[in-house]
Image (tube, rainbow, N blue to C red; front, side, top):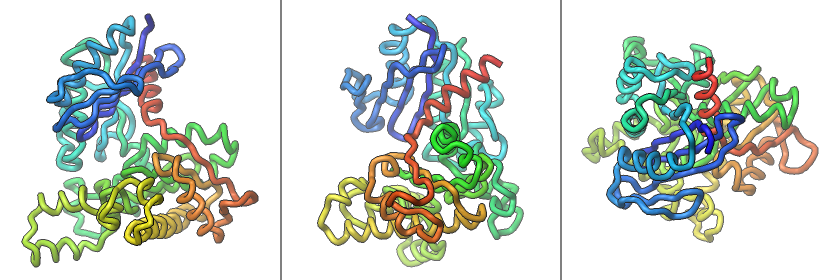
Length: 368
């Protein structure tokens, strides 16, 4: 039996709990509940396990803690949480207290699809283990170093006072990349790094001297690259047209942009890059072409933001596993000195490890 630190990631229809040894942070157990809101399914260490099919987030977390985690550990030292939106208030991890939780909940209008589940995760842990310290780790915090000229939108200043500005996301993933990179490329990690987190959600980050200087996502995770079911950069006039000509309200537009666009909308087949790369359907090929083209163009913007690029990093499900995408992108960036063939600047794959970043932050804050 050992003392443990947990990293909890509560998504819109899933809960992922990764357990780490408190001494050394070696991971020893991963538990994931999927399909919440429909037919909840559970996997423990990759193997299917029993759970009430109607379990909501709170019920799933309680089951994971009491039935799966607790019998395997002596004590939980801390629980770290991925919180999608930290707004302007949170620029580093924080120990959760009533005031912090209230401030996190108050940010729900900025991330209505994610923030409520992050709050539920914190409250669910407190209900089961009320004495266990909890630490909130914010996906926006890494981007707090972006210059103000890249944070603001060219709209009336009054809206910024209400929180309308560029925040950026996937910050925990980029933080993990930057922790791993010195061991791979040495001093070049302190230079000009362009990192691409490519998964169902996708973004870019331009990093220099270890700090975020630009990112492709903005006020919400909708902006930037083409994603699994999100369109990325889109002329706002399209939304005005949808309202005027199609009578769509905010909820309908939200559903369209978050669930029916992107690779899925372009192909009419799938949001999964693996399916599209294997398909001989012309619509699938077009979806892949648009994905790569947008990615290459946005990398150009990232390079402009930091005066060039020394290292290109891929992470996330597509970034790590879709070699044809990496090769096409690298070959299109010859003008920056990159190539899929040997001899160019470093093109690196770094496995995403948001949970490891969360666990380390929880350990450090609780020990402070």
